[in-house]
Length: 61
Image (tube, rainbow, N blue to C red; front, side, top):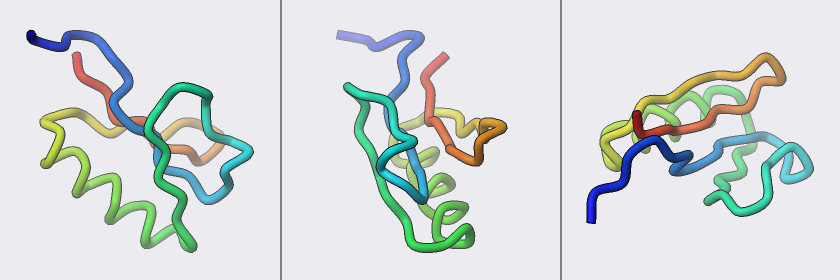
């Protein structure tokens, strides 16, 4: 099965900002968030997008 057009993960500083139903990674600092988002991009073969509220989503296009 090939996954197309899906949110694979969310990276945030606060669990309350995370969407329901997504894999959530909660970080302690902005630097940690940047690193985790970059790592997940490579591991999941996705693209990281930083939203206006500071949350990263890792998506598959």
